[in-house]
Image (cartoon, rainbow, N blue to C red; front, side, top):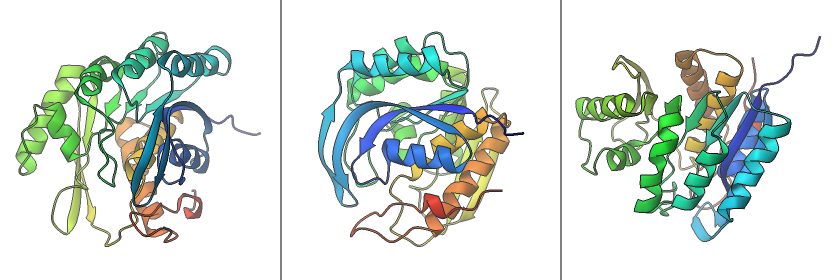
Length: 266
């Protein structure tokens, strides 16, 4: 008997070079056995060297895409990535008002290339979505911005910032340590009650990391859609990203894309 795939809606921007955004989301969801749907917030001209141009879609049209998916096919989980403006963030929140499944929120503020993708007003509008989220997955600069802007120095400071964010929004917070220094990458998953689970692996020496955050958040959403427990979903999603980095095809002169299609399932 064929198993029905979990329905995953990704709300994010389009990456013309295919490495991040909706393109990375769809590849990840498909590779992990999900059915991918999309609500595109922005169309970008970008490649491994950076973002050359961004065109935001009208907020009401973003909401219409969400409604078209949810009112017909429905969703078992939703992933939110790049929003692009405060109005789009608010429109997405309104469109998701009746959705009661797990929501994975990746507070995209800065691309791997360094391009700024969210201004202060947009970050402020994230609050309503974070209140709805099952898990918030910031990298260290994003966690610092969401915690008042002070740099996070050391494991204890990172934990305290993540725990405060988790308690404030009654959500799990995955503090991603890829932007930290050292030979090992340490991520900390903090639950709303302050309990923490740490994940650690050796840092992979590579420049091909374009779309890692998008891939991780989409993987978590898909695994939650499969019914995995939060800690298992995060653990398996991290493994998927690790393997996709190792399988990177080597494209581009800058931060190259991952090798999603080369990761073996099972």
